[in-house]
Length: 99
Image (tube, rainbow, N blue to C red; front, side):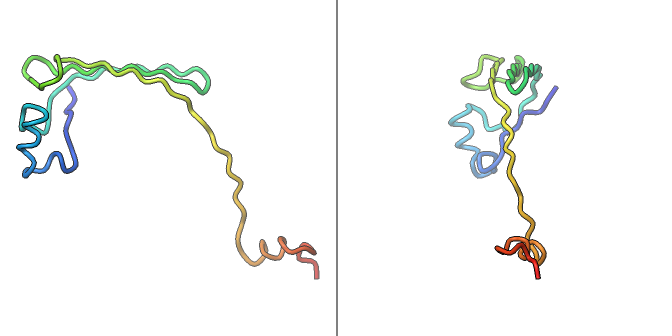
């Protein structure tokens, strides 16, 4: 079982009426079972996650379970870094720091 919680301003005690309006419950935490699998092929990946809130957790807008499907791409950025300092500054002069 995993504890799925609301957070941020939404979870503040003073916002109980707002939670009750949007979720139909003043609760900030719900017990659930989460199952997931990720498949990676090279830089591409697919992920399926299934949340089951069970019969005791009644949340408006949910039918007790929810499945999320994600497709993505892993991208690498190679950024060249330059050293900064007296020696690096000398190397960057037109004469290459030669005396």
